[in-house]
Length: 117
Image 1 (cartoon, one colour):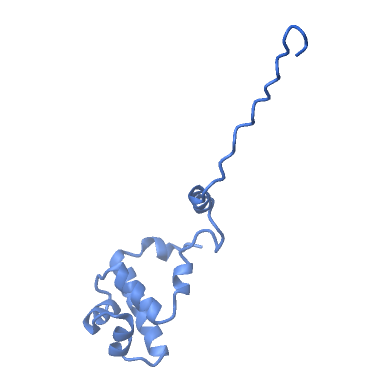
Image 2 (cartoon, rainbow, N blue to C red; image 1 turned 180 degrees about the horizontal axis):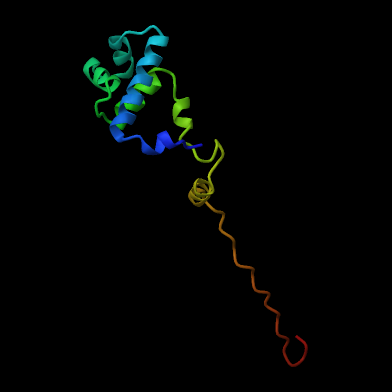
C-alpha cells in the first residue's frame, strides 16, 4: 500500500532513506564499510556516498543489497506477488519450440477404369 509520504518524497529524500537503510543493515551485521564494499565489489567511497544519500548507480545498489543478503527487498518491487505475470508467461511460451504439425494426408481414391480395373 502506498502512503502519502511515499508519494511526496523527493528523489533526494529516497536516496537518503535507502542509504540509511543500507547503513542500518550493514551495522546490524556488524560489518564495516570496507568489508561490505569488498564483498560487493565496489569501492568504499562508493558505499560511503550511497549510505550518505548521494546519487549512485542501480548496479552498485544491487551489488550492495546482494552482499547484505537482502535481495528480499527487491521482491517488494514485484507487482505479481511472486507469481508469474501473464506477460512473462506469454514471452516464455513464445520462446519454446513448437512441434510442427503435418498437414493431413489427402486420401486419393483410386479411380477405376471402365472395366472395374
